[in-house]
Image (tube, rainbow, N blue to C red; front, side, top):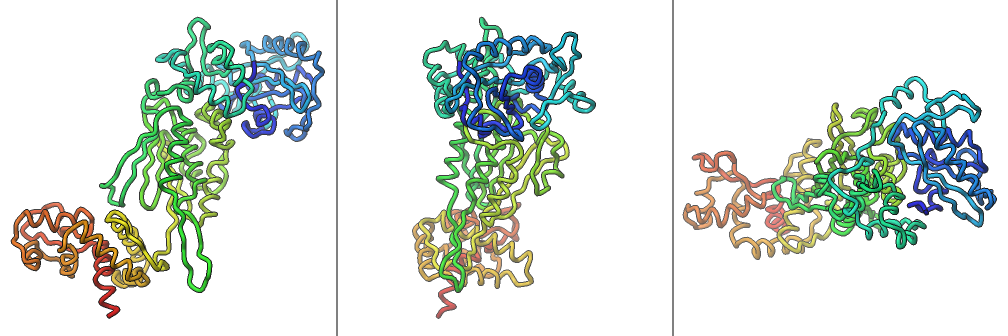
Length: 561
């Protein structure tokens, strides 16, 4: 029966890291049994590995085209593999499959991580040979000693959560359509066979079920990828997206991405691609061509979300939380990274290689779907994408107890002062623009000796009359005819009675609700004593946004006159 992986991708190291591949030109039982043992022990929780017989290697890389095996030797070698499997203690049986690659016969041994670590193998093929536990070290199989031996002993019968049986589900909770769609996408030869073989045999061959044949149960990884509603069996195994309309945190909406894990990831990536990522155009003085970048580079978002899906613990009933702010994206997952990676290591601007992984099977399936890369490439990929986009450096954070992992991608700042025309289509767009502009003014005020008023004037210096006229029209259409007057008279804080008298209105709560409350809700004016709305000394004043709007709509045109 074929293996659930694309063989060309496998041989060329595109779906599996090179450390997990071993190439043998011919049959060498002594070396092969040691590698079988090392992959079964899987000391780093990488997910085992593959032994490919019939392909020579140089420096851990295949020499192609394959040397190949004689067709008449295939049955004999498969029988010899079973003999080696009995030499391991406890006994361990890989999946064996012959293939034809570039016109030559090869044999592939898929060696998933074993459930009964540690495994030992004889050091030689002679009788009464001593036995040792073997592990992978780079692309070699070595005897586990000292610290490595202690680490291996600590893994005794410890199976990562994604590779465990889920007692809440049955094999009927796995969906044949999802399995076949996966096999077809990765171009596995098992796809055609899946149309004919029994469903239980298919699931066994994909290693997504375990147990006695009469009572097979799905593994957690099988439910996460191949059940329609994995959250039924693994609580809150979804992605939550909170979309903040402004920086106050009060105006937001939520979206939930559920279903198979790879469907969740692709759905939220599609959302960002279609609704969030925008091209940023910066007009530079004395230069004909504008600088073109993106507010967020897609590659950085893709890698950060893929890392969260790959590395979170599905044993915890906490979803992946994504917060989308006007100026940043925050991706939070639980718990934090696996030791020895800690808060200090995360701050280092270099490749981070962990010695252990939380989800060995989830990682394999994501790699086969090309939704994540090999080990240690995530942080460099994100940093490089942000750097190439001229975006701020990303932030990676955890606490001392490693209870969470936070990735923060900051937006590419647009040069507002270089924009000559700002079209506003509605009140929401106008408010968003004012929020963005006021944040920039606040940031500049922290690092500048200039007065805030001068900063605001500089930010608005190149706005056109069209922007002013559009802002006036939107306010009059969506609020009332007195909104601009209120902003105009608040050169200094005033009590409600003063404001309403200036408008020719009585000091009645209905007038407050009609004329003042909408401006407070928009963030254009605020109370001087917000905790006590009815305080006798309560006054109202313009916010930074309100000052910007006043300057844009009223002050700019008067200055030109």
